[in-house]
Amino acid sequence: MNLYLVQHAEALPKQEDPDRPLSAQGRADIEKVARFVAKNGDILVRQINQRGITLLIIEHVMKAIVGVCQHVFVLHYGQKLAEGQPEAVLREPKVIEAYLGKKYAEQLEARRAES
Image (cartoon, rainbow, N blue to C red; front, side):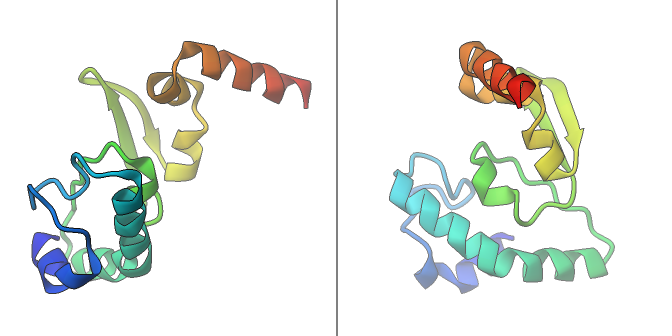
């Protein structure tokens, strides 16, 4: 993945740590990387899959990976909270609570129960 990113570096924001492309980036830079991955990630993943290689991406910005990953694991303090297709995993109450807090997760569950 790093080689692919280097080949397209002009499309990405400047990085202090090329091994962690979204670390310490502002919202605009994260959006730029997310758009790049959404546009080009499927090509990269398809090429890797054709070679029978599994790609492990460690990322905290879910928006950056949800469009490219076919299967995700969500870890919280080293414990697996959820596993599966990205869209389903993002709806898991445990995942929402870990990312957004217990109060927000409870409010969201209450809204879901009403509808």
